[in-house]
Length: 166
Image 1 (tube, one colour):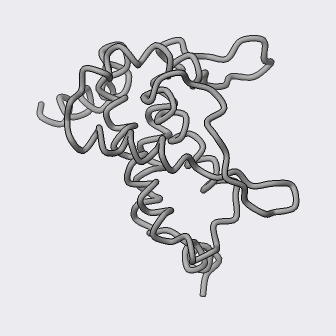
Image 2 (image 1 turned 30 degrees about the horizontal axis):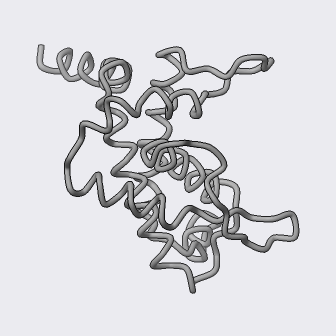
């Protein structure tokens, strides 16, 4: 078995869902940085998710799609756990975000961080992990359609599609 195959074999989440989440997350984070959501006072470039989540609320609260509303509810009600220094997991309350939408966006970021940095190998949480990943994909997908973001998210893709059509 290859190292890549083994990594997915022991992952307590659906491989395709994880790949989808990483894909949308990376493109959205790129788009946010292009739109100016950059953390200040750092010597390196980092996305300012907190600032974005606060500014996205007004536009996202107009979304009444049942799938989006259910995803927000799940991400708030089952806020992702956080791994401790001793490698155990703790239930956490949302660290910031006064609105449910802010919390859902920040939950989505934590889900990505947990998958990327944490040890998701406890198959007792397989169903919960997949539910959270699905909800994060829905919320982040809606974020990609925010007016100030969609140009950066879809811009290069649309230019490429137009160029291919010529």
